[in-house]
Length: 437
Ligand SMILES: Cc1cc2nc3c(=O)[nH]c(=O)nc-3n(C[C@H](O)[C@H](O)[C@H](O)COP(=O)(O)OP(=O)(O)OC[C@H]3O[C@@H](n4cnc5c(N)ncnc54)[C@H](O)[C@@H]3O)c2cc1C
Ligand code: SF4
Image: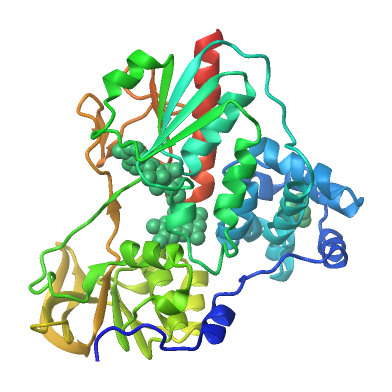
């Protein structure tokens, strides 16, 4: 009944959450690199949101120079280590790799990227040096991928950077969101510490824009401001019983899991129902299963083809034993002291949008995780919004002079780690140009 910690032994849980794709050995890396055709106008580069010179870094690995390969990657994407672990490569570089197109087997770009960046990070020192101090200061709000990429690029150009983050640890969703088996062994904090090795970046935790800081105050204090505040709120739908104990946002469950020193302490239901169709739904479902839930069901209101989670991710979930039910929307969660049952209505897509057919079904559930999307938490009023996010032009310019934004909080672009890095980096270059031009 209800939630219970330790459904599996600590050893089983450790095994379940082990590194999804452990680092290649030097020999495996050479074999993988050898498959690359080093294409001219390589499609893999075009598909990479951070424009990493993929054939170049693979050639460097093939030539036995993995540190140089790592630097080629990190020049474009300072969080290349995290991206190597979490990028949906099957939809980006590896999807368009000519060896995937011709043979259905791409060059292992993501794993080679990890091999090269791990090599650089294991070496002494930081691969980049700061330029001479410019005397300018930039305030960066948010220590997630967007804020960190912006801060590093600005520091490299000699600006003094102050990062303000609301949470006790930096890294944003790298630390609090990404599935635990994609980034085990404290990699998010290790990468953050390594990134700060450039110098010139000072991080203040527990400092929240809107509570402890104002945009006007930051503008007065700094020569420029970059906002990388992500999407801190969760979407809500009106469902009877949604306040019952046992029903909670999936992102909170995932954050708790990521912060646990011992995952066998995390309480999970015997029967878990996850509502939603994106990456968060998949991660919540798979990790519930890995914690020992017996039945895990994802319920999505439209068809599989409309799910934000890719076919690769859906396959990952079903391989883990998760059931996916489509065309159903929650109408009621039942249970007085604790949720016991979730009622769903079948849905149909019609000319007037989605509608319920009138037929319903019940799923037994002692835990319901709502993964119906994140939203922007109270943005400063002076900013213009577009589609619920901060409206930006070009490389992250907001309508407020001296203020840039990027990553999930900014309109346009995909909500991916690599996109956030690209946007942070590009906004930083624009800030640099505006401060020195
Ligand atoms: C569960 C989950 C799994 C995901 N898995 C993947 C994946 O496998 N691969 C992938 O590519 N992408 C994944 N994503 C998406 C990816 O994590 C995000 O696109 C990326 O983290 C966005 O970076 P960001 O810097 O814009 O925002 P965030 O990572 O959200 O960072 C925002 C930072 O700003 C801080 N902040 C927020 N508000 C304030 C404020 N008012 N004042 C001060 N600080 C503030 C937060 O504390 C946080 O540190 C996942 C997302 C989720 C939710
Ligand atoms: S498309 Fe594939 S084969 Fe061509 S350069 Fe990129 S990784 Fe190498």
